[in-house]
Amino acid sequence: MTLIEDAQTDMRDGYHSGAPGVLASSFAWSAAAASVALLSPQQAVWVLFFCGMFIFPVGVVIGKILGGRATHAKGNPLASLAAANTVWMLLCFPLAFAAQMQMIEWFFPAVLLVIGGRYLTFAVMFGMKIYWLLGFALAAVGLVSGYSRVAPIVSAAAGAGIELVFAVVIFLLHRQWARARTGTAAA
Image (cartoon, rainbow, N blue to C red):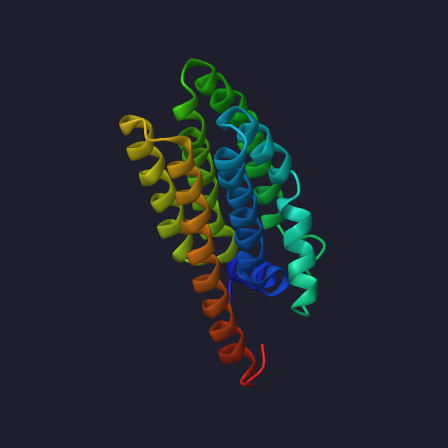
């Protein structure tokens, strides 16, 4: 096994292949979609922003509830990729905020593009091609939603739905991987 494969195995093992974080992100998108429906698109922008700050901690809690470490080994070289991609994502949010100042219908599509791009690096961090599909699915919906100027609830709900479906698939893939790795029925 190579150094990168060892690091990916550690990330997959420590974070349930990233599924808890994807699930937590779908919760944030769901809260934003509900806020669009119940409050206003402008308030939903802030709901997504504030809920987004809790995606990692909520993902850690979900991972621990599932019996995982919810962390990586000290010295894992992929930890710096995770940190760098988080900073990149945060630096992109002002662009999404500026887009919504021009047209509120552009905010959620812009964030879908940012988050989709972020998930592409997860393919390397976890060594799972499913993250290419997740990233491109979010980006495609972001592009179509932005160009079509769909109602904010549509793009927010699409983000929630896509991430929920992929969270389930990634949980199942992780379980299959863990069983194969340990040769046991429990994962």
